[in-house]
Image 1 (cartoon, rainbow, N blue to C red):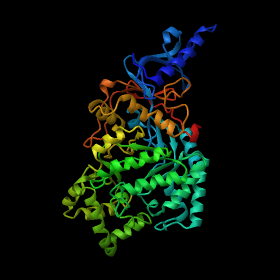
Image 2: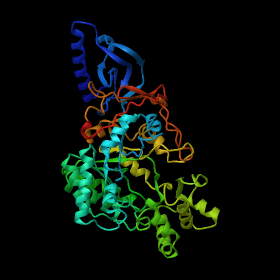
Image 3: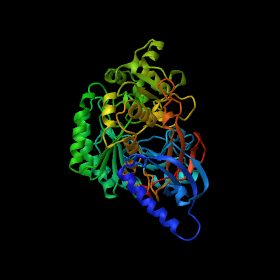
Image 4: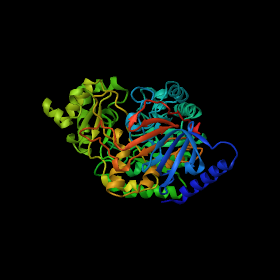
Length: 536
């Protein structure tokens, strides 16, 4: 039997609890569900132990050896030899849990995910109470918490006139917007400074808004301003430094969304970026990062293949500029430079848009039309009116940087994904295999990190960082969010060629004590809970 110090402490406490119950007069303790004989990895980072887990209602009520404690159960499930962990946390998700098919969360459940963090990249509005109430009313498969975002705040106050610094009175209005979201239970304040409208904000504006989140004990979540390939950006290292400054002066913890450096020019900067983060951590700034374990990114065409002035004002303004010869003459060489920085048109695949063009590269589409890749972008955007045209950028991340970050104890995991709205949409495989790929590639095949370390970064670390009590560990009194894996069968099936393939090896998933996945099949039970800041 293997035991870590934290696990031994948990089991010791549980043993005292259980033996105390057994010594009492009356019938033996009863639970609703008993998972028997699992290799329990409690999420704290220690090694696994053999243990049984009892669940009563939505909580873990027993951890130990059920036979010796004479525990009785209404339902008993053998998990002998299987790995039992806390449910996994996707800390940067775009899952639309309020809509079908997102409310079912199937790609996430089949990886063992039970909790998603939403409203990221600066996109979350401040109607937090209404959205969480809707989740509760209609039912959701996954637990969900939300951020309030910079983008909606800026749009609400400045409208389409956002391509400039905000005036003092506008910043005050944005602060009121953020405060409403925080008062209604947002985890904190999120930005997408590489996108419109946040691109035009000053650092001082963001600090002022972040202080509002700090006043409520919130967190600063950022898609920072320049991950390495922003057109005429500030550079990756300056972007990292700016994010640290916003958190430090604003008075919050900080999490970098999908942290990595983009593009060949920025890849060598990762060691210095890590040094700056760890120096800030050393002086007391609570900094975490989320990572994607793939080397391709996915975003909107107008969001990362165009200069920021082009889509300013919204789809109608973008459409007018695309059709105007003078504007296009300015725009086209800038788009060509952006494409070159991102590896060229062969590296850009359309994922959402007109079906006949999805899963095809810009180079291929341009060749079919007999036009340049930049002209192909123009035509595609006009066809879609500048909305919901998504692309995947192959080989934009360095696999060596992925490996380096995976070994850091301040790094969590994300898919950065969402369930596609239709069965035919091409998509990034990260939604279906982001967590499973970390297990297979970095834990099992390359042995860069241990399974206990990987599980900690997916469970207790985010639960602690986001300040959500009674989740993220297998411990009596904690919510029964659990994942059960057959380690010998864990495999991501999703690939760039066939991304819509569910992961294998996840046997059971319980969300708040209910089977969301049983014997490898989604049950349709919607036991997820909306979570407000502080776990309410």
